[in-house]
View 1 (cartoon, one colour):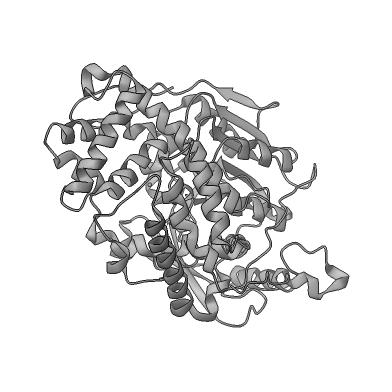
View 2: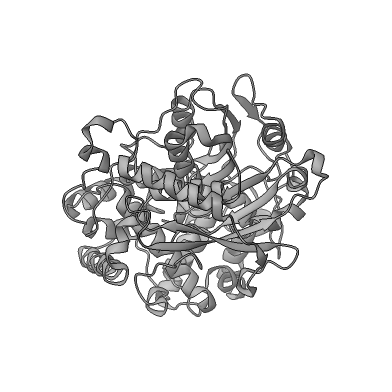
Length: 531
């Protein structure tokens, strides 16, 4: 699912059948080199060249939506780091210069919002938001589109028109015939990726995203990197910290992916599906407490029955291009951020009373966004399928997801269908890097996590905290919004600012009280109150 591609707090304001041997296995005298010896040397060479070349910033293309004084440029990276002088691609980069006096400036803050498949080109725009203004005084805000994303040598697996199909189904307990259909679609999608990308396909990986990040650091003229990654951005940020510990200045990991190699990526997605069921229950209980506003039921079970009634009705007669699949995708957003809770409840309530306008507004696919949606999905698929060898047996997928769907039906099968192309992937796969940093190897790093986050379940933050010695974890208790830095929780933001402005981390892991639940309102989206 797109659980790793969305950053809730900002969004509400965004193979062969054999595992390929790692390159370092071919160099016995340097087998300790993480991620491959040849690639390590190639990354060093690419960074030296980027440091000499720099980035020529200028006016941003209209497509980026970044008016002056924001600037855009490109940085060149090798497609294959084992051959740094071979084929290169250009990554797009955005910059908003620090707004404070020169005496207080601290260089560049590079941001990635997640994915795989998400672009951070919008990041300079956040300087106008009050929660980010103190940081914007000290740092140039640097966004970029990772390889394959947006205008960074865009990857595509199918035609955008055929990718965005609507209305669609979303059975929580699919029939054998429906499963056969989805297996065929997944196989065809994997073949489309291989056909369109060719030999380059294997190089869309998290390890290469980490290497690209170091080339960007060098091109910006930064001796050491200051970085904030959210969701999937925490994973390749952690890979960066393992590959380039001496290049780290400060790193923030917001909404943390579990870096355990055994979790990447098959088990991570099963964990996500289970966590989304919990967060889905949180929303249904909230709606039930506000039955006087929404009239969807006085209990979570009754609210669920209202949702199921809407899904069945849409299955019989779609509302425009909104069928059960589009309904489920729209309501998945309540698992990312509670700023969607009131809007979603309003749409469901209005639809069941005979007015589909609000539901269509939140659920109907945007034809104008088809290219971006297909591109984002292509990058997501390529990176996750390349990062690790996935189970090849459909029987295993079927058994594991059937079992999980008995207790977590809301998202399990939709998640499985999104990832199933990895069962039929033809490009060589990587071995996940074992993320580690001994005490003293890294400067202190800061982790942020919401206790009930569904997209990146909280145990992942505990795991990364254990693996990065000297890191500190700030937990937003009782909350589930995905991406909490720079949001409405003042306590979280105090820790974030203190770290990025001075390097200070809590002496012990810190906790913040939960943000207030959103107000139940009619006719407009409720915004979460400051906490």
